[in-house]
Length: 113
Length: 110
Image (tube, rainbow over all chains, first blue to last red; front, side, top):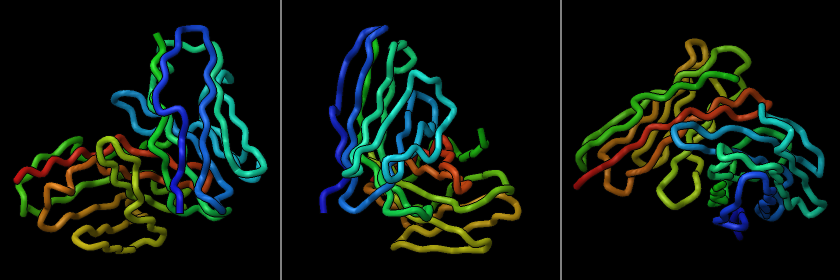
């Protein structure tokens, strides 16, 4: 069974640009959540999607957005990039509606110059 | 933002030593407590998800306990091996989102 796949794995952008990250969950998983990790911080919850609907949202500015497609694949977008957006962005999938263990991808490492 | 604290921040033990880490979390709005192991250059992997006060879970040499009334969980590793070197994350699950601690970084040297 294929794991959670995130693309791209690494990318470099400049301030003011926008970026789109992609996440393909484990087959059959309908929930996808996104997390940001910056140096010295724990994983910060961005948002969660279930059946194409944003179910929960963390405390991030509106520049951070996401969506989920009918095949459960998810994308997150960050507009007007700032230096502080440099981070590892992790996606995790989960089987259903009840809270259970998360299955993480390897992450997309974004560097903003 | 819910405060999830993990201690110690880092730990260096010798192969064969047993060790334990602490995760403290709010005692209200508790739904579950997760433990993950995150090895360098890999993705975090779930160790345990615990929901009941007094829960004890075990996987090989690793075990965990949960006290929801006082808001803490312990993770124990018996007879540490170099392959146990990783960052161990706990996450408080309110049923809304997971709030992660900053992790305990464990280094086991031969």
